[in-house]
Length: 406
Image (cartoon, rainbow, N blue to C red):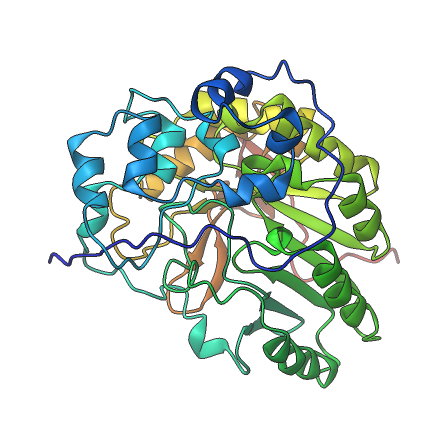
């Protein structure tokens, strides 16, 4: 079955205003300097390292994109449609990492539309995870007993073409304090909720004072034990990680960050410095990676990514099978490929560098871990276990509870 999906150019001005942050403290000798001089010749060092300048100057149209990369026929055809479900937006910083002449480059494929997005396959849905049916109030998903997903904005600095929430992001509604109040009231009225994950959109695109207010309100709810923020900002907009932002986040420990990382090419000096600032502030960092065909679906690529993350103090946490959103077939791999990669990591590298391979079950079933078969069977009271080399070992398993000394 085929279905056309069309694209709209998103407005360029970021939501809200905030006091001007200090320039991002990074050397002007960054590899992005040549890109800046060519495509943004009027931008100063302070401009380039200012996250608000990056948001104002995002690449959001066919015309702008065509000045930076040599568009393939597939990309040009996809961009020819108007009125989109998922807009185009790429920060200048991230655009500097994209190949101008190779349409198969992994980072380029994750950000630039192709005609493959216009094809809708069997099993694909607008809301494949059933989030809307688990939403007791707007902007809040309560799927698990003790935690909620709080969608605080629909705005991202850059839009991944495989986004699970392509049905809602980029609508330019920004953050909505009135809706926040309803979500906060629901959380406060349900003492079983101990864990709140802020997502969207990307919460770190909001001004410091808005995020500060929201985190402060959550911290006033006695039963909220931990707060998490899901973000791709350190990878696509590292300039946003300012000393002011980090100092504000430190006030709300225990606070965790889940960083969306796709490919080792994202682990630039700028991204490294952003993660270092966060880690130095005592904020635990975990990664979330989506397995994507032709982008990161090789053991060598995934190993480099996981090792690179550990080196910058980001714990690989989840490796997701790509969600079946509309037009995602060209991104999705066979599950067997994910199991092959997982098997190639487990036991062959540090446990800290091995993420949990999961499918977020369509229809709202939650995350289900996928692992190669390790329990072979039993012989008497012995449990037969297969290790990472494929060898079988015995474990003396006590059936029916531990024995007691007479």
